[in-house]
Length: 141
Image (cartoon, rainbow, N blue to C red; front, side):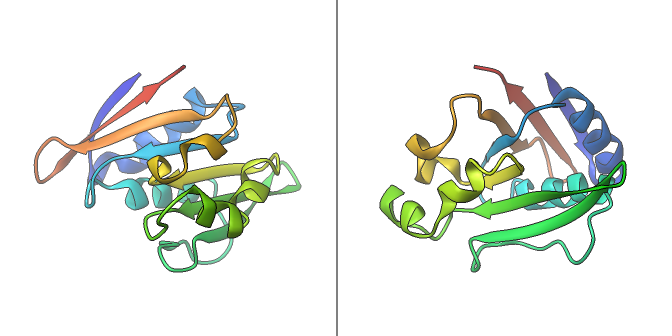
C-alpha cells in the first residue's frame, strides 16, 4: 500500500491509513530526519481526536495519548528511539512495556532496537518526494 500526499492532504491520508491498519497495534515508522514521521503521527492522533497535546517524544522517549473509542478510553504510545545508542538502552527505558501493552504504539527510529518489537509489527516507510510531497509505504511481513 502506498500514498503520496501533501500537507494539505495529510488528514485524508491519515484517515485512510487508519482504515488500512485496523487491528494493528505496533507500527514502526522508518525514514530519514525531516521525512515527516512525527508530522504524520500527529495527523494520525488528530484523526482519533486524542486528548491533550501531541508532540515529539525525542527527549521523553515515550509520549502517551488518550482518545475515546466508542465510549472506551484507549491509549496511543508515541515512541522515539532516535537518542538511544542501543537496544539495551531501549530495554532499560521500559520500551517493551509499551510495545506489549496491547495499546497502539507508533515508533520512530525502530532500527535502533529491532529485536524488541513484536513479530506482527507493521513497518511503514516515509520519504520526501519533493519539498511539498511525501511518500508513505506500508510493508507487510
